[in-house]
Image (cartoon, rainbow, N blue to C red; front, side, top):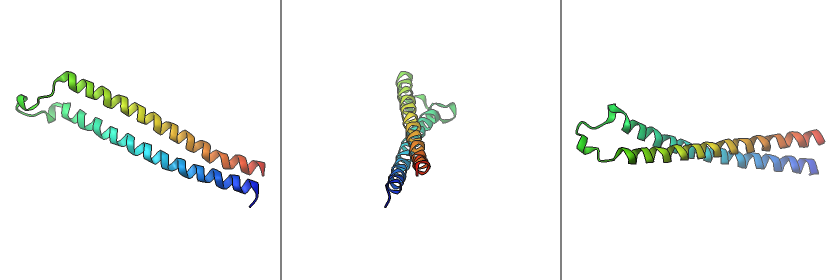
Length: 101
């Protein structure tokens, strides 16, 4: 196998690995999004219990939880962006190896 073909194969392996990272990071982001949607649903007037005493969470506690969820969502969205950028770089690497050959 020629040197350029080995480099090309290695680049594609790297791209495949990065594709799996993108998938994992996106699944983690979806999980946080579901938690955010759940909390938002609990806070909407439609889903509030009829009996106020059944809702024993304080507003400050809910706001703190919402801030944590939003922060985690932003962190995970950033991880997805980084993984996608890395995947783009991995896919561009074979093109550079082709141009050299």
